[in-house]
Amino acid sequence: MSKQSKKSLKGQNLPLLSSFVLADVLLVGWLLSSQGQQFNWQTVLGGRVLTGSLFPVLCLLLGALLPASLKATLVYWRLRDVLPG
Image (cartoon, rainbow, N blue to C red; front, side, top):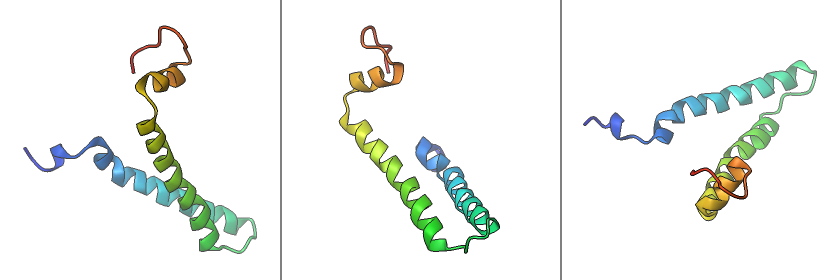
């Protein structure tokens, strides 16, 4: 088997997700500069990248801590006869 076929789905999607993050930062920077505000990389990178990197980590931690039955209840919004997750 080749090395690429052993990559996880997260690993395979990392380049695409990274390009979306970069495009988001550039778009926000362009919007700020086009509205007459002084473009400040620190503001753009601090706000967007920080939240964009902290929220997935928070979701992964919550996903690891919550039991499967509770996650299925939250996803399908059913208290009884929850579909299998």
